[in-house]
Image (tube, rainbow, N blue to C red; front, side, top):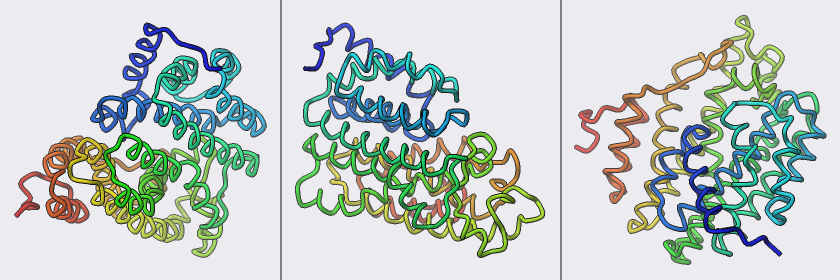
Length: 351
């Protein structure tokens, strides 16, 4: 039986989660804070659990066997408070970003928050976190020398486990909260994996060099690179820049298609579900802006390189995105503008 946590410990758990969120989240920190009540608590907890799994997966020093073992122990934390309490010590060897490691070392506290969620939300979060962790463990064992995706099909499989599952989980949480009627839920479900996978692909594209250098992971498939005369071994080789840029161009095209599907997911959300729309719109707008810049640069293929949009554009998109939540027409105009040029409020997008 689950342990009955005291109200004080539950409050401590939620306080910890909200305090550490900005340090471990790039895209979703503000979005999570826009959700209120039990839905906000559920999404906060779900995000932190997924980030813990991701921290284990990203450790470039841990062996595949250790990653698989720890991921297996991690999902058992969701069923057994004693395992959750012991897990930080069991995972003490995991290395990585300081804030991410700090979160992992308080897995016990995140699980306190998890156990305080409504039963239906607990069930759906646990289901999808298990699915994500299972896939991460499988890929770690499949590529013992470091993640090296070989085909587009394998890339799609990987993205499903690490991001498509998130889209599924969120969609089920929208339903649990009662803001999405059954007919609309079916339409959302048909596109929910695209919502997560599109954001994942954009993040992968902008961090190609970072992932290869720091995490020993290459996501651009070997066969795609070879088809253009490049290879994963020469991914950051200046002499192969033209060939590798052509291969990455195929994935930029794939990302545009996925992102447009993710945008349709947003438009299908009921207009009255403003907080859920707010949660979804900001990461999508930032992804569109980042993908626009990816089409114009090769920085992500140079050692130490990455691609970012300006802070000014981030702020402008936040204001414009939240201001247009209730109108699909204005959202379409906003996205059309962002696709073409860096967004400025006076650019005439609403004209």
